[in-house]
Length: 288
Ligand SMILES: C[S@@+](CC[C@H](N)C(=O)[O-])C[C@H]1O[C@@H](n2cnc3c(N)ncnc32)[C@H](O)[C@@H]1O
Image (cartoon, rainbow, N blue to C red; front, top):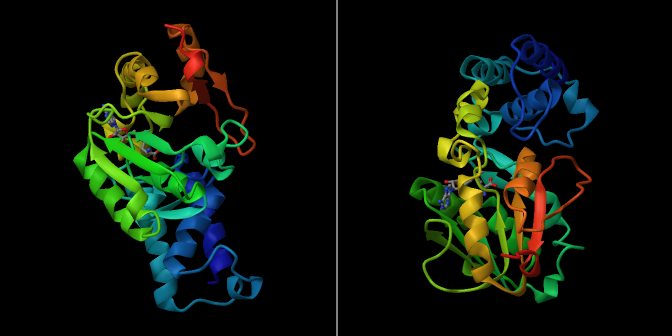
C-alpha cells in the first residue's frame, strides 16, 4: 500500500464510522491526512512521488493502527498524536487541555489589525489559557508585549508550561498564573483575551464522544453557558487600561450575549477563515 491509498482507505473508514470532526479538521479526508501522515512521519507538503511509493509492512501497520485507534476510542486526533497547530505554531496537547481550535488564531495572526494598534498594546491578559496556545501565539505575534495567562486548572497550566518550554524566545515575557479568572493583583491590561467555557451544561453533556474526552471545565459553563462570561464582563472594565479592549471567543453564543448583556456593546468580527463568535469590546463599550 502507498500513503495515498492509506489516506483514502482511512477516509472511507472514518466516514463509515460516522466520526465527528471539530478539533482542527472538519472532514474525514483532512482527519485521515493528519493521522496517517503523523504515523508515517510525513510533512504536509510531501511530494507526489513519496505519496505513491509503496510502504513497508511496519509503516502500513503503524498507519492502520492509528486509524483503528481513532475509530475505536473516538479520541480527538490531536490527543492521539499529542500535538496540534494553532496560529501557525505547533503545540503539545493531551486530555488535560482543550484541543486548540479557536478562531482567535486569525486575529492573532494579523497582529490584531485592524482592531488594535499593536504599538499601543504593552500588556495582555489571557483568561483560561489551557495549553497556553493563545498566550504564546500572542507573544510570538507581538514581540514587545508582556503576557499574563491564567487558568484555575493546575493540570492545564502544567501543559502550558511544557509549551512555553517549546518557545524559549517568549519565555521571559509570558507568565502563567493559577487564578480564578483574573490575577489577584490589581494590574491593568491593554488587551484581555479569552476563549472561556461557554457551553450550556445540558448541551455539554450531550456532545458527541470526541468532545467528552476534553476537560468538562473547559467547555461547560452553567445552565445558560454564560456563568464564566458573566463574571469576565463584570470584572473586565476595572482591569482594562483606557483605551483597552476585551477580545473574546464565545462561538455560537454571540446573540445570547448581546441579549443578556445589553450594556456591553460588542463588535462581532467577520472571519475570513471560518468560525464565529469572536467579539471585541473596548473599555468605552462597557456602559454599566
Ligand atoms: C475553552 S478552554 C480554552 C483553552 C485555550 N485558551 C484555548 O483556546 O485552546 C477554557 C479554559 O478556561 C479554564 N477556566 C475555566 N474556568 C476558569 C476560571 N474560573 N478561571 C480561570 N480559568 C478557567 C479552563 O480550565 C480551560 O483551560
